[in-house]
Image 1 (tube, rainbow, N blue to C red):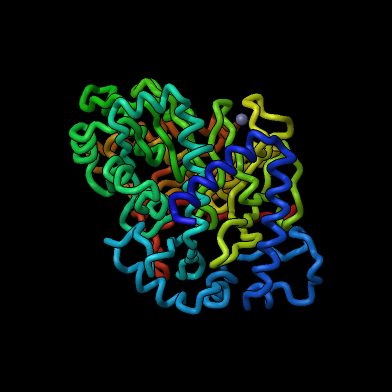
Image 2 (tube, helix red, strand yellow; image 1 turned 90 degrees about the vertical axis):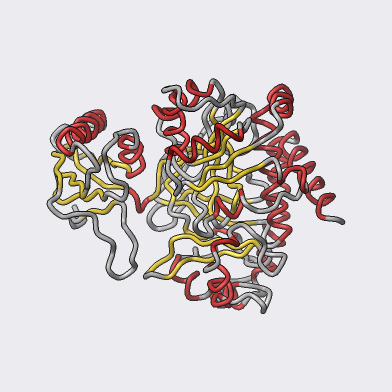
Length: 461
Ligand SMILES: [Zn+2]
C-alpha cells in the first residue's frame, strides 16, 4: 500500500471506530495492545524490564517506565540497529532539519529528560501516518465541520503555525513534517518561530493572511491582543492550541479577537496525537491507538472524577521504539459520565504537570498553584523580561526572580496585583508575593532555566 493510500485507510478506520461506539474502540484497543506487547517483549529493553513477569500478564501488571530508565536504555529500546542514541543526538544538533525525516523514514523528537540528558523518541512512518490521520479526522475535520472546511478552502486553505522551531520538540516534529497529502498541502502551511519578535510575527501573518492559526495559547493570546488593538488584521476560521494549558481569559480573548472558535489539542513526545478538544471543552483521548492510565503516586489506578498524580501512556502505533506505560508527568481527570458531545472516546481534562506545581496550605487543605496559570496571568504585562523564575521560598511566600525592561515599579505593582488576585481566588490570601533580590539564573549543572520550583521541604504529616 502506498503512503497516501495507507494514510486514508487509517483515517477511514478512525472515522469508523468513533462511529462504532465504545465497543468498536475497545476491540481495536485490545487487538493492537496484544500485538504491541508481544512485539515489545522482543526488544532487549522490555525483556529486561519485564523479567520474571509471565507472558500472559496484562498491561496493568507491567512495571511503569521512569524517565531515567528510558534515557539510559535508549539503544536497547529500538528495533532498528541503525538507531542509536548517539546518532539521533548528532542529527538533532542540526536545527535546520527540525521536522524533517531522519534516515528518510523516522521522525525524531526530544523532551526534557533527567540529569541533563534528554529523553529521545523515534517514530516510524506507520506511526506518523496514525498521528496524521487522527489530527485530520478527529482534530481538523471534526472542528471545522463541512461549512468550516468550505470556508477554509475558500480562504485558500492556508494554515500558519507559530511554535518553537529552534529544537526537535514534539510540536515541531508534527507540524514541520512534510505533509503526506503532498505538495498541495505543504505550500499551504507555514511555520513561524516564536523566537522572532512579536512585531515580526504579526507582520508576516498580516502579509500571508492564513485562514487558520496553530500555536501555543500564550502566543495566540499575544496575537489576539495585536488584533484587538488594530495592529493585526486576520480573518481566521479556526484557531488550534498546542503544547500548553489554555487559560480561560486567554481563550476568551483569542475567540473574540478572531471571531472563531479555539480548540485545544493534547500531545506528547510519546504519542503526537493523544487527544483533541470537543465543543464541551473536554479532550477526547484517541483510545483506539493510545492507552492513557491516570494513576496515583504508587502507580495505582485513579477512578474517573478524581485528579491523578500522573498518567501512564502506552503507544499502540509505533513499533520502532515501543512505548509501554511511560510516566508522562501529567495530572489528568477523566470525565465519569458520557460527554454530551456524543464521542465514545474517553474525555479528560489535563490539570497540569506534576513537576510544574507548587503546594500551599489553607488550614489543613492543600492548594495547588500551577506554573502555567501564573505564566499566562503575566504574559500580557508589558515590561517583564522573558526568562523570569517563580520560587516558593517559604510556606506562605511566592517569590519572583524577575527583571524589567521598563517602568520597573509600575510593572512590578501590576505583577503583584494580578498574582495576589489569583491567589485570593485559590483561597490563599495569606501568601505574600515578593520580588527576589536574586536575578534569574540557569541551573549550573544542566544549563536549563528552571521555570518554577519550591525550596520548602515536603512536610510529612
Ligand atoms: Zn466531548
